[in-house]
Image 1 (cartoon, one colour):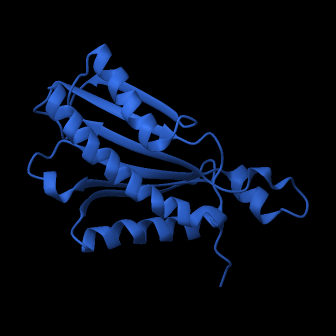
Image 2 (tube, rainbow, N blue to C red; image 1 turned 45 degrees about the vertical axis):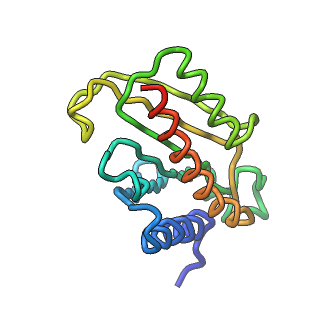
Amino acid sequence: MFDPTAYENMKVVIEGAFYDRDLEGEIAVTGRQDIMNLADLSRKFSIEMELKEHMQIRTLKGGMVIEASLENLGSELLHPILNESQAGCSVRIFISFPYQLMQQEVGGLMALLSGIWGKDRLIEITSSKVTGSHFESHEFLTNASISFGRLVGEDQLDDLVDMIDYLISSLEKIHSFLAVSL
């Protein structure tokens, strides 16, 4: 038996929290990836969801991604020898919807997300032309990404679970924002 790393512990807690919300009927988990890259020994877990109340529309999705590199794992396992500053995982929240926003709408969405996640977060919004995806009936896809600019460790597990509330709030407010904007 081995001692699980911070990445494994965080992945299990995040996955369980998302599926608990799914069982409660608040969200529907619509996708999940658990990837280990054997070439560089990195790991990536992502989980995607939709709000149950808006599922008939099937356009607004959100989720969370955690990633750990070999440096993160090595720093954690070799902490007596190495600097612990690289121990942990990077966390990113993502939101996507199949519409192209005008410049003023991008500013409005940026302000909306900054209001929910805080001004210190790294928020990126991009739109691209769609070719062959699950949004094939739409011409454009807008993606929002919220990053934290630092590694997250096991001592922030409760914060990661709380991020699901922020994600749900973001999706609800974006749904209203799109209803007004489009």
